[in-house]
Image (tube, rainbow, N blue to C red; front, side, top):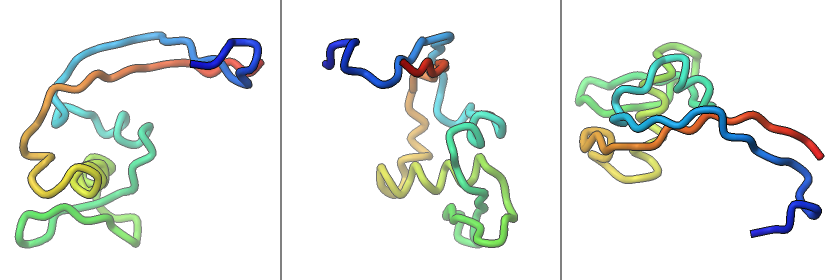
Length: 88
């Protein structure tokens, strides 16, 4: 909602796909900036402070933090958008 001349960056979409949330790969979870995480004995996701665990579990923990308990298990359809950044 900003005129292009006022923008400092331009995002160019390079790929769009629709997938289930739980199909996120380890590489894609890492690219999202998720920390490493794991599952506790009760099956709840947590962020691993010492770098153990996986990026997928860290992403799941972040998703549950943002969207509430059980949000990861709902496994909604999401749009995965890849883009490149072009600075003006």
